[in-house]
Length: 95
Image (cartoon, rainbow, N blue to C red):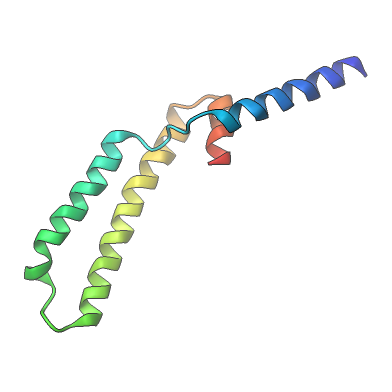
C-alpha cells in the first residue's frame, strides 16, 4: 500500500506542475508564419475576391483561416510527436 500511495502522490505532484507550466507547443516561427499568411492574404484579397461578392469573401477567408489553423496545429503536432517527452505530453494534453 505504501508504494501505491507514493505513486499516487507523484501523479498528483506531476498534475500540479503541469497546471502551472507554460505550454510551449506553439512555437514562434509557426505563429509568425500564420501571421504572414494572413497579411499576404489581406494584401491579395482585392485581386482575388471580386467586389460586391459576400459569398466569395466568406469562402476566401474561410480557406485562409483553415490554412492558418493547419499550419499552427501542424507545428504543435510535430512538436508533440518528435520533441516532447512524457511529462511535456501531459502538458500538451491539458492545453
